Length: 375
Figure (cartoon, rainbow, N blue to C red):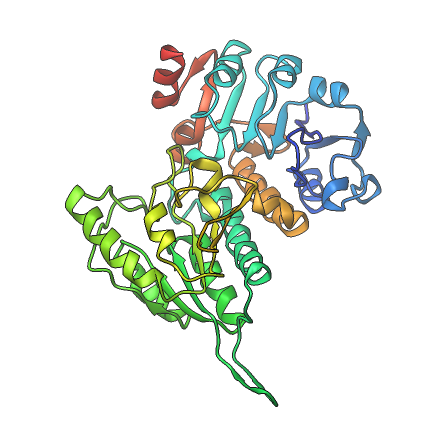
């Protein structure tokens, strides 16, 4: 019997992405799966129901009840979880570290759930990496926010009234979001520098035409993330960064570790030392913020005239391309278990095993199991 893959409207305020695009729906049909969507599920991303060819559009309750596989952007609500059949599969960004009750509900409903943020960061997994694809959108959008809020031009301009010097922009963190931010700021003509405590990023930053800001601190870690700095290293970094920040017109902070609070990099005292009119965009504001005083979804103007923009769900502000990339990520992951229209789970595949959150009435992810037990 063919597997039914479903998607419903996202319920989180401001979420405009959809986990299932017409392109991916066609691919699933070609693989022998049936596809069901809630009416209007893709409308916020400008995908009309009519663009989903050979896909049944119905109400949310019917889509959930029929789903063998539910694809989602934001985690399903407790009510949605209760409407899924026992044994159904949920694939998406499930944020298990934020809501123990949701992980418990997935377990108790005997759902098999895959939290895409748990996906191992390997070469084979790159085509499924939702964190990277959406971080790229966030890095791009963050620079546009900074450019719009800045009281200066980003590029150098030669005018009849004289030459306008380019803005100096600092990108903190050289992961996917940071590298995209560097590339975007360069395209806008700014003078760009990049900083990261991982020494291997120097070449990546310079390959994009930016200057590597060396603060004398190296914190190479594992899995593509930096290790935690020692107290001495942090103090050295803070002193050097505080001095450097005085010369920048815009700063984009992008440092984040999935499942953990964002590292605090820029203190209120450092912001107080920046020039009037400077702009900071904190991509990590939703997870605690890299900048002291930032607030998700708000712009805070300090006493010395520095604007701190706490971004919120930047990928959702580019819903067409963000949805296309996200849906392809999920499809590439689903392909690991889809054979002739039927689901076959290979627990010997590390991508399946390590991404699994719940299965058969158990929580498979140990940190989440501990969190639920303590809740």
